[in-house]
Length: 206
Image (tube, rainbow, N blue to C red; front, side, top):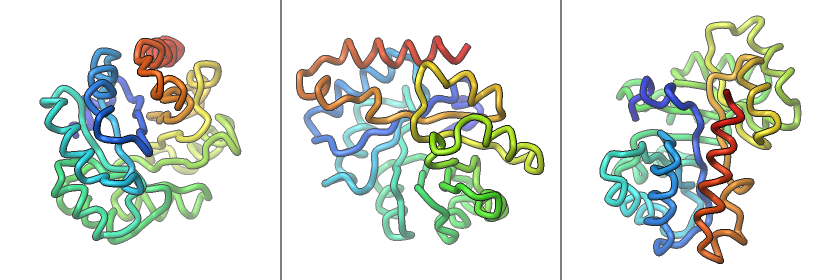
């Protein structure tokens, strides 16, 4: 992942629990929507092969990453499969430090001020505030008071109605998942609705 490229449209897609047959249309939909990054969670069955497939299909058009990375072993498997960035729901210090040393973008999860600071000190590219919707955009404004140099990513409950508020309040990026990759849409193969939902989120950011 090229962080500077991601920051041009700092909206990250999260894909969880899908099978390999749906990877190609998901990647094409994400690319056509203009997204710069998409992560596949490591607690999805056969996650390594899903990442390999996504890398093959994407042909460099979008950064492919691994989410829900909870151990150094899971991180290594993800990187070996072609992931170019790493995301976790919490701080796994050895994962963040490894990525920082090897210049791999890494987004560890945090919630409290101490967790945010520790994640940043370990070398986080951005600190993922999760679950963001439990405190809302105002919490980002509060965090940016003492941590004005730490970049934050909002994950959990980001919608077209609140996305702009997160950015105005200090978020450098946001992430979305099941709210747009709805099971009903996926089961029906209705990728047009998914693309439309992504575009609405992008437009609402401005």
